[in-house]
Image (cartoon, rainbow over all chains, first blue to last red; front, side, top):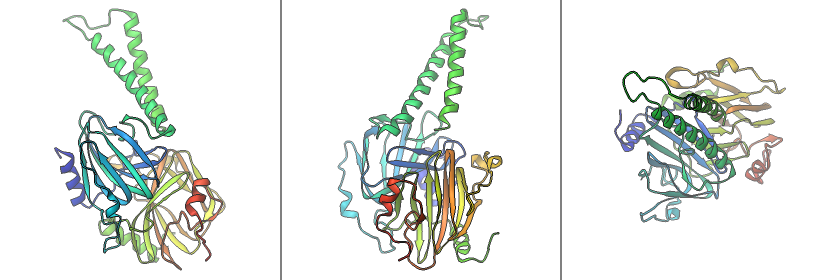
Length: 213
Length: 167
C-alpha cells in the first residue's frame, strides 16, 4: 500500500491507470462539474473531474484529505493559497502529439491549504488523487469546507452535513454511556438510551437517502 | 449480436489491450449538456473514445448519430439504452456489486449501434460509460453535437450550436 498521495499517484500512472470505478458512490454532480471515481483502494482514490466552460469554484479545502491534481484537458487555472499561481494561458497550446501541452502535469494540494479553480471557454478535465487520512473516501465534492459552487452543490453538502451532525450526536451519546466501571454495562436512563438509538436509526436512514443523491 | 470484425470493435479491443491510453485531444475534448458531461479520452483518425458521466434520474429522448458506428461499454451506475422503438431492457438484476467492489456490469457492452435511433435512461445512482466511435464520413468531434433528434435541453442546444449533422 502507499503512504502518501504522491506515491499513490505515481503507482496509478505507472500501472496503466486502471479503470475500476466503485459500485458505491462513484458519481457526483454539482452546478458546474461532474466527477467519476476511477479507482478506490482503502483510504486512497482517484476521481476524474469534468468542469463546464467558464465555471469557477470559490476558495475551499477538503478537510483530512491530501490531494494531487493531474491535468488532462481544457483550460484550468488552479490556484493554491500562498503559492505563486502562474497564469496558465501561456500554456494553452497543442503538444506535437495533438494533446494539451499540460497533459500529465501535476500540482499537490496539501490538506488545509485553500485552493480554487477558474475554467476557461474549453471547459476542463483533471484527475484528483486523494488520500483520506481519517475516514473512508467518498468524494471531495462532499468533503468541502468553504462556499459552495451553487444551489445543487448546497443540496449535496447540506445532506452530508446533516448526516455528519447526527453521526456526531450518536458518537457523543455512545461515549457518554460507555460503561465507566466494571459491572455497569447498560445506560442508566431511558432518555439516553432512546436518544442514542433514535440517532443511530436516523444515521442509517440518512445514509440510505444520501446514497440516492 | 457482437460483430468482432467491425472497425469500431477492433478499435475498442485495441484500446483496451494497449493499456487504454488516456490522451485527450487539445481540440474539442469536452462537451456538456443538461444531463451529461463528456470527455474524449483518445482520438486517432476517424476513431475516438469518449467518457460520458450522466446525472442521476435523467434520460435522453430518441435520437441518432448518423454515419457513426459505435460500441458503448458499461463502467458504473444505473443506465440502459433503448432500441429504436424506445424499449428498454430491464437490467435491475445486474444492479449489484461485482468483483473488487466494482459494478457487476463493468466492462460489459451496453450497446452496439450503427446510426440507428436509441435513447438513454439513467437511474438514481447516475451512470458512466465509454463510447467507442468510428466516424465514417468526417473527423470526430462528439456524439453530443453529431445528434439528430430532439435535444435534451437548453444547454445541449447551446453546446450543439451551429454544428450541422448532414453537412
